[in-house]
Length: 522
Length: 88
Image 1: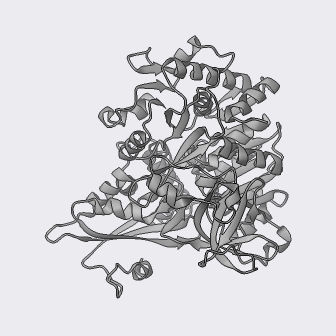
Image 2 (image 1 turned 180 degrees about the vertical axis):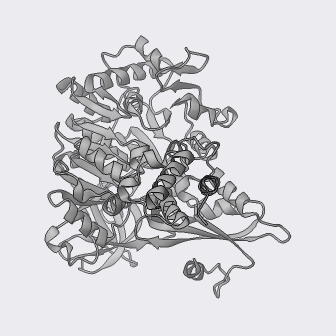
Image 3 (image 1 turned 135 degrees about the vertical axis):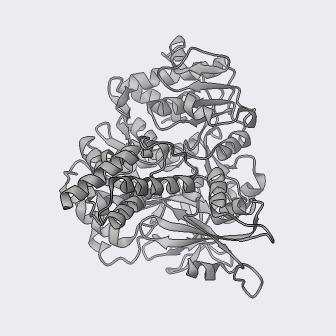
């Protein structure tokens, strides 16, 4: 069994050298090519001085080079950080500095958007595109890879079970994103479970819908590689248009689909699934938010032969519970359970008196233990100590638990229901959003005195964001200016759809902004 | 009074410019790809469809919501004109 993620590729490349591994934007790489390219990149990174645990950023739209880069970094002993290619420069520069990224794999166009003075930790860049100028200073063209040994990866650097593989940045309540660290072992725990549960095989065609900075993408890529299957990255211009997306599923013969529910809702509503031959689609996985039951029932009817699974888990544990949709009871179910713990993982709910819930109907916060739990947040010991806590319920295990912050209820039979969040975190299109982070950005504007952001429930995308602000005395707050301010600091999915400037904020009896009242007005 | 061709393009361009502004995305020309620049995402596309349906009193079928019809301001205008012509 593999103990490092990159071994999954090396093993499949030995078994299936000529089979296609990835398809993206009309280009594909076979297993032999992907192995060779990632070996070359690993040697290049080593030669440039990359040491064990050093961070490498991936900053370009999904392409076959994305996967070659992920494996190249891992083979060099590094840690990759996938950066949202559509996020504002300010946020990207913050992340690069926060985890001290030494090398950036990017494109000339994306690199241009960053201010070199804001990213002093970056020592060199590799331009992941076919036709670029020859090596210049600290910019290395992709074609320079041909000068490196592609036949084998570099010698591993004393691997241990605690080695990090990648860092995923998610919304943080303090106004800045936080980096969730994931080890090879964390990821492999999940991937091995998926390989068994979903019987991923070399004939499978997996779709890759989620962006690489989103943890749903871990399944698509690594489970395809693990099995010797092929992963098809969905181009943006297909992803946006449901009818085109349906055609993509049919034409590429997608057999395993994984996305947030909102993407599937769009397909159900506008994708003309009923008219398509979806016979190859055998498994549909979804995670990241609650699937509205009425659309799930429609999906189940439109794809009657496919197995449907609800996966649950914060980035900090990847996926920790699963529920296989039972078509026999779907019509009468009021809510879809998040199910029970994946193999190798244990979950339990803890009530207000710090007791593990064992009685049916009991409610509490969900805790997760096992080899999938993150070691913590990059450079944030305080946050790590708050969320990743010693296992006080089973002290003999000498390990940590992850507190999800999610409230759940134990059902008869051992499944859990998801009830909601303990804090002001919400989900929209599967993205975790701390409302406090958006409020902090609004408050950072010099004209803003008070700010409140509320989420309005939305069946199709989970939630829509509405912001309310008041101005400092004497300052005239321009709406376009505020919108511009948000757009320069926040990724698109966190920008409020509407910002309202108010004279005063409604207050609760304790003098706090009355968010409940605002939510009713929104 | 029927919409003139110029006013159709102006209204589409204004909607696109406002959406781009809100998202902090640059919008420079009627030819530019709105999906590549990020002006149009999976939510915006349905808002745009509703906007076109309401503004120009037409119905957009699901199979018409494809990249070819929504690639750029020019393509959207061509699509709207085609719909209006077939309606008349």
